[in-house]
Amino acid sequence: MKRILVLLLVLSVGISAFAAPSAADAALKGDLSIFAWLPDNPDIVVNWVDAFKARYPNVTLNSQMMTGQNLTENLQPRFASGNIPDVFSFELDPFSHSQVDAGKIADIGDTKAWAEMVPAMQASWTYNKVKYGISGGIATTLIYYNMDYFKKAGIAAPPKNWDEFLAACEKLKKVGIAPLVWYGGFPNMLSNGPLSWGLANYVYPNEPGVVKNMDTTKYDFSKNKGWLETYQKMDILNKKGYLMKGFTSTDYAAGQDLFNAGDAAMLFAGTWQAAYLIDKGSFQTGLFLPPWNNKGKELVVVNASETGWAVGKNGNEKLGKLLLDFMFYDNFNIYQNPRGSVSPFKSTKGNVLNGKLGTAMVELNKYPKFVDLWGRLLPTPAATESTTLAQSIYIDKTPEAVIPLITKAQNDWFATK
Image (tube, rainbow, N blue to C red; front, top):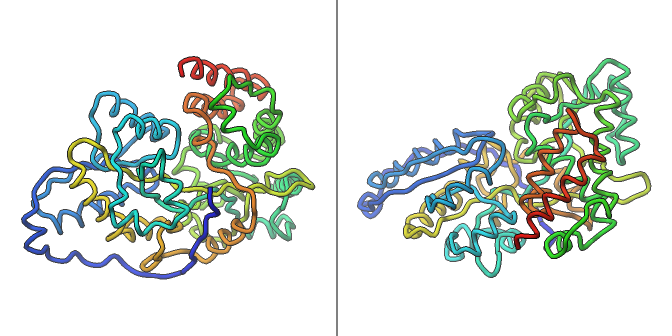
């Protein structure tokens, strides 16, 4: 995967008023559907739909929001039944690739949005020569922190390794501040956060070919000690009392609200959450790269694409591509402005990017070694099981008990290949 380069422009613009449709636009007829995974801001889809209807008044556009814990559980029954939406949120994971191989995803290489994506994102969204998705943004997960609380606890600078991170947590705890909001009720963020950074810093250094090994062999997760270490580090945070009370039921929206309310000093969150977290409380917000590297080891970072968008190969591809271009080439600001995410496109005109996030992304790109998100690297059954088990270590299982269960899920899948 090529190094992801980020253009960092901080602009402030509004969404322009809807223009009257041209005669050709008004004459266009048809039916379209959007199926969206946007748990952070469903209003984005409403705004896209309103803008599209204003331009194409005789095209019927129906939208539906995905629910639950992740995108795959929403799409699997749709694809299995042949009920493929026209434009939908999509991923870079094994399930998504299987749908490309099954011929259910349109090649969108002829769209304006595809041509506008930076080369690294084009490479990410090409599978078996099919150009199958538009990235929602360049992404990672970061530690957002309350700068006032760090000052009160005597923490002069963000930690740079795991030992320093634990020391910072202990200082916060000693002055009566809960160190961490934790998404115990939303396993998808445990996957994107501590699991992904654990894989990067404990699994990958021991086994650079780990992704290929999982895909091509009957894999034993106990053979690479990094898998266990990933879960043990998550368990340590709880045992030391660094996670806020009631964290096992904290979901996506609640995590953001609790951090902004000052209930804890830090939150592990995505770059796609920047607009909802940076300086939204009564304190200054800082950001730093998760210091999941052990002392004396260079940090391996998570540098990836956000969830993207695809067009179904269902006989309505022409209109589907028109809608995709409308959403991401003509009106990406409707998506980017309220989220403050990092653009995947060559032009950043019209984007609103917070300077603090920009600085963090520049720092991220200094590190030569990086990996993708956890859920995309493991075979789908192992990814699903391991993410669910990330919650269970706080309820009824030890990290040691988790490893053979992931191995079983992976090998049960491998036996069916």
